[in-house]
Image (cartoon, rainbow over all chains, first blue to last red; front, side, top):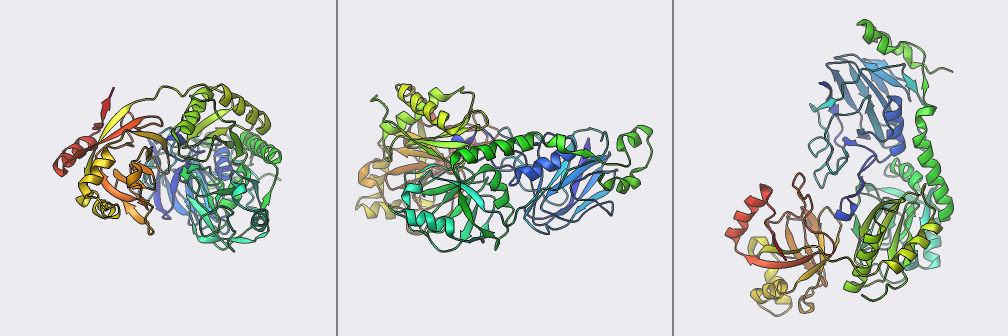
Length: 340
Length: 239
């Protein structure tokens, strides 16, 4: 059994995939990667399907060792210094470690979430159909908990094949407005309050995690109080509790709640919001549902077709090394420069 | 069952809508929710549904259907959903009331000017309806609380309440599964695990089920708790 050993990692490091589907009716939110496009990038770079499980790192990076066999890896998402066996790895490229070598991921230089994908994927059993950690439920991840130093992740025994790949790095869009569709309870707010919501420059507060991003800014007024009969919440729901300051529900959200929701962040922009740190500005822009759906379809297409955008990069071909049993992985750094 | 009122179709972003039949906690509205839930099964654009008190949250695939066409389909489906599907199970759930298991029992009884035993009697007398499973995995929200013991939420929520907490808040009653924050009044605890990964079934209660409570003593709680930890259901099904 091939393994990837966690030598060190930050406190909020967990296994996440494209999310858990079909269990929301029992109170289980989807979880999954906070930035699914970045997870897809990392996966595609190592030849996986875009939604396969990878390691989500939050602000801090980590040190990962290939045990037993050669292992191909890629990191995507928030920009960070990545090195393999001490040699720098260009952003948006895969790299292959030989047994005993380590991949080092530095802290995020901007943004929040970084993803490490492993060719062939993780041989960890899913719970409720997914590897995504849902910490409150204690399901998914490795033994229902975040990763920690010393963990050994079993890998599928798939020898790296073909050339290393490159993709243009994921954009964080730190200044882009976060687009929303108004509703489902925009009618709990007057026109002026909705206008104020769309005009305000909020910032992400320190209370921001995988469950929700509480914003900071002036309160907005409710028209008919702030209690509704509890109904369903989605990732991206913008709840306005009694304080009048919005909270955007993220992928580990509670599945139902009793505060009115003024708007919902569109699917492609949820990852953009996710990558904003406490203190980063957030402005909302309302768009019609038809436009939101076009953008959601384009986003789904982009992820589905990402593997076509990945380009082979010049240099050492690791499967040839493996075939010949030669120890050439020391030359892997030659493979880092993407073809012009 | 009466004809469904024409529901409001409320967009929740680009990939979900709430189909809202009203804004009350009402068994007839909830029956419309469950009836619609049942007839939507198998639609090609359907991802998953979340039944709640008075609305059905429908997650759909926006690459398979647009909002306008979906809204029409949902209104039409609501019209033809007919009567609610036959309810599932009726469960009797053992509860250790008061003491360390229900730290708010005495204070809540005092609020209503009744004895703790009378509060237990009123709490365990009705047959409740499971309106929804929500908030966190396996939290069952029940309707049917005796209105004479309805109690407003605590002003200060507790950050941690134990697994299996049996509580009331407003006119609602709750069977909690895992440790969670709560602003409700803790009357007791059940050894029943409404959510237990690795057990079959993982989740016990479903929307539309009926629930009764049966008082047990702390010793019985401990016995049943050990059995439940080993994977037994310990709630008793009724026919």
